[in-house]
Amino acid sequence: MKSSQFTAWHKSTRSDVGGCVEVSPSNDHLSVGVRDTKDRSAGMLVFGGTEWQSFVVEVKAGSFAR
Image: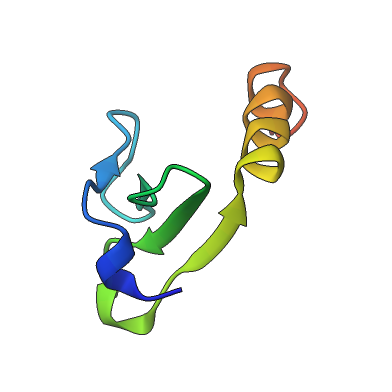
C-alpha cells in the first residue's frame, strides 16, 4: 500500500519521549498503518482490519503488559 492511502495519523496520548508510534486507518478503512514517529520516512507496517482488532483486544486484556 502507498503511504498516500493513510492520511489521518494519530499518536497515542500515552506515548513517551523515547518510544512513540502513530496509527492511521487507510482511506478505505480496510487496513491500519503503523509508523515510528521518530523516523516516519522509514515506512510503515500495514495490518488488515481483523488483525488490528485482534491486537487491540489483546492490548486491552493486558496480554502485553510488563
